[in-house]
Length: 436
Image 1: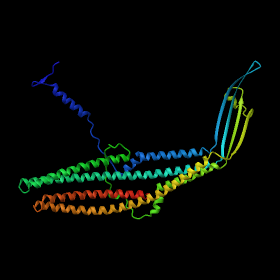
Image 2: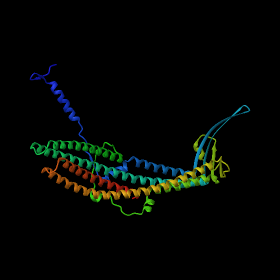
Image 3: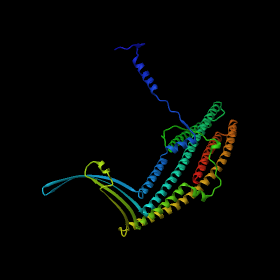
Image 4: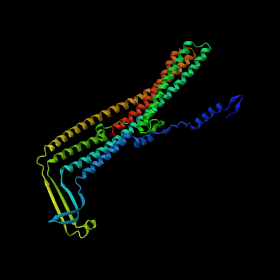
């Protein structure tokens, strides 16, 4: 097979790479645009997709099942059965065959059993505790979403500040190069400007990495793929966290869902102790049975004339435990130990809640003052930079002085960004600690 040539060169070797390149361009998938999320949208997604919250919902369903299981001990039990039989008896050499079908229905009912009723009460308390725990987990997820969202905004804005710093030092390098070419700047000034560009670019790489990690952290909190491109929207001024100034710490502790959950668990432990002690109490039960047999294998014959050829029994039983191998005593001792453990846990939870509230209050106050100071620092650093640039232009200041002013300005802007979002996180944390 022969191929055409162009100016003596084979056509195929030239065409093949072009075809491959065209195919690659057709198959190339354009990068997905980042989805823009507001804080409210992130909270909605987290409340649906977050795995921690999903586990808390399953715990509540398990508590519902425990309540249902407890009630099964006092509800009547009804059962029915049927037995078919074929019998052969040999009497004095004569085979005697018989067949029949027997049906029965029975009912049993526990009348008095303190242990079962105590367990039912405890199961209801545990169910309420699981519901309160779910509510506290929901509030924690809301806070963690806010923290991750504000952390992403902070990281992105810090990256933007550093990117502007890189642009600023590049512009300064251009000016210094021009002055050097005109003989108005020294070689040392030019080298310092070049070094500052390298340092600024390294800092930008670090802030860019921090922004990507913060984006993945928000996706993890939402319960979605951590590679999802997310763009956070800076909330408006009226959408920021409300500042809380006055509150009653004891009332706040008592209103927290996690504290209420511990209180319910403590009540459930008391019911569990009562259920163990009921092992020494008498039990009263009732059972009834109806049984009828027919001389055939046809199930329908059991329902013909049910008022004939049947037996019926009713039984009331009273049992009093005397000695069960110390099992009841062991159960009571274990329940008492568990009750004391819950009492200690509740006390520890209240102390931890008080600490969380006080710590969050102090962080919020610190954050508010930090934002004020950082704002003033930016204004001062901006003015210092303007003066330093003018002095350097007039050769009244060295390149080192200008670099110091520029670094101070970038740090001041980064400090304001950091202080602002730390304050928003602190306010959200105080809201969570107060049970709001």
